[in-house]
Length: 240
Image 1 (tube, rainbow, N blue to C red):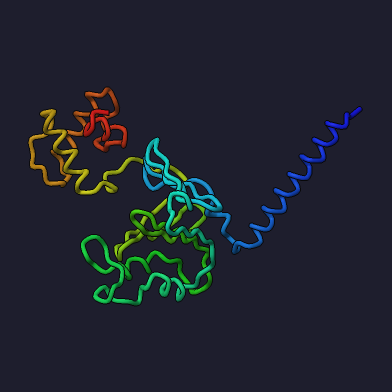
Image 2 (cartoon, one colour):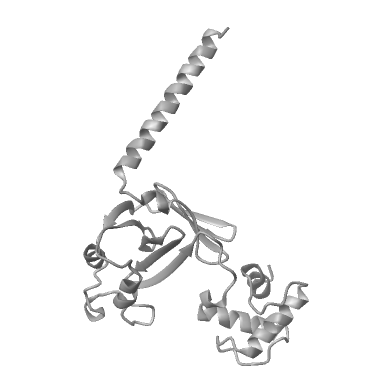
């Protein structure tokens, strides 16, 4: 037989469950069709990922996590799901504006509009998008859109400079394509210090760099693939 306390606890628990269900239904009704496909973890490469929630985006770099929310973005924070047509996409990112008039460019100053438009799904119908923006010490935002259920594209930009980032549900294999020139220089310098590489420190990963990387991997007792994993890069460059 239930005691009065147990009955109160059961009633209170049921009320909380009903409230949670109502809030979830209200939130779902307020979002455009297809927004659910954004939720969860997306991988940029073998060590960097994002976790998209209903109110935040959490950036994951190895074991480090940074949540973008009103606390970490005290000046201005936006996190908005919406549907956009191709024309609205062009207007939102000002892709019809030439670089000379403030249009988006890459880090080298080359126009980005055509490259960005090439990523947008074919057709002119509405596409579910997520706009997530942070204004803190530095400010910038990313407009995400799905190319299919397992592939997400992000247009990340700030101060007029943009880059295209591809995400997937599965963790991509290690790749040197995602390394910056600075990281490549650091890797070659570290291989030189270990007397594994005698070529130029020029950020170009040719046969000599690949051979040095394989030798380094063998020294760790790991598979000599010639492609460094993130943990191997950290150990090589920083001694981690």
